[in-house]
Amino acid sequence: MLDSTYVFALPYAGGLLADLGADVIKVEGPGRPDVSRTGGFAGCFPDGDPGGDWWNRASTYNLLHRGKRSLTLDLTKPEARKIFQELVAISDVVMENYTPRVMKNWGLDYASLRNIKPDLVMVSNTGYGHGEGPYSEYPAQATTQEGTHGHCWVSGYVGGPPSKVGASYVDFLSTWSAVFAVSAALRYRNRTGKGQWIDLAMYQSGAMFISEYIMDYMVNGRVGERIGNRHPHRAPQGCYPARGQDQWVVLSVGSDGQWAALAKLMDRPDLLADERFAGLSGRQAHHDELDGIITQWTSGHDRYALMEMLQGAGIAASPVFINRDTHLDPHLKARGFLEMVDFPEERGIGTRPFIGRPYRFSGSDVGIQGPAPAFGQDNQDIITQLLGAPPQEYEFLVEEGTVASAPTRGEPNLPGSFEEQIKLGRLVGRDDDYKAKLGIP
Image 1 (cartoon, one colour):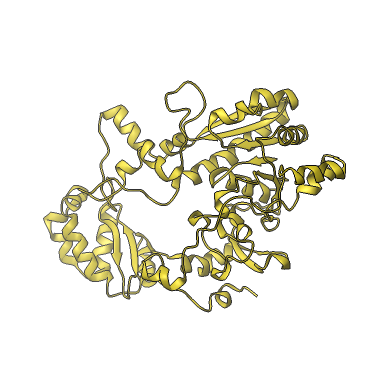
Image 2 (cartoon, helix red, strand yellow):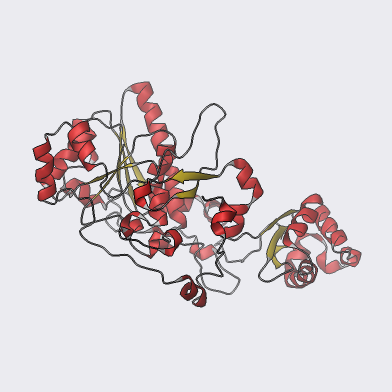
């Protein structure tokens, strides 16, 4: 598989497919390193240290590109495009996420590549899809597309402005859509011998996940509204403070029986006789009063104790986790969700935990196949061994800057020291013993 993609959505799809056993070659330009290597999007560096080769150490890059090989190619040059075409001839899948004009101008679009590999499966991931639509040529990124597909409009608090729901929510949706689409296309090829082009539009991935609002408008003409943590068919529902500093629990009551169980847990039988809270419509109309009553009760209990009491009474509930909780949660440990990955000693990263997949197979041994590669670490092997080019040709490519083992442009966007990030409110704290807690040697 050739993975000529950048940022998050399809790079992560390539990483997940590598987990499943695909031989994935990450292709990026010597002067256009993936932004996951360089900027604030890069996440963090091991122990806060960017090191001498910061482009190989960023956490986001190493998560997305685990198990891949790395090839750098300056695709603006004809000789680089020739190498790409030679790789296409021996590849099952090609993934790219340029704006529609780019691959066509290079002669690397699906119509061109299928002449080289007739049964090729190719994925093109753009913001708005290829075609004649008025937005098709627009560049886009997930950080703004929540607005385009409507998610921002229905996210936020009553009376407040539209809100985002994270840094790049739509990226993940496109990741999973691409993994499914590639798998389906390969199955189709195995059955028919025919390849195909997958035209993946990120904003449509987002629109799929607000389908109830779209259907409500189609059937009833109603426009969705912002209701914060509340629910149109359940009440009370919300996020409430638990005992301790900045500790929280979420709960959701879905029936009159669950409301009675909650009133019993709170030792408030009087609430059941209060006409204001009779039935769903009553509880929704007086949700503010209920929030105050529930807050008085939850703030006196530990968040895990609340979860156990509420779930024991048949009420959906959970503590609110921070990233520390996710790493140390015994259930995720039991599921094997975090996988330890060993880096080569010369990388100076050591052993680190990475998130795996939310699914497990009973008959297949699936897991992270190895660390993300260093920039261009497989250039020579791929060009001289896989493609059979003579050594002098490879040396010429290096001299001409067509391939490289370090980026020719870019610089790290350092987030500042841990103390500075805490002061700015980007972090709430740091555990000095985090390695011991995570089992890192």
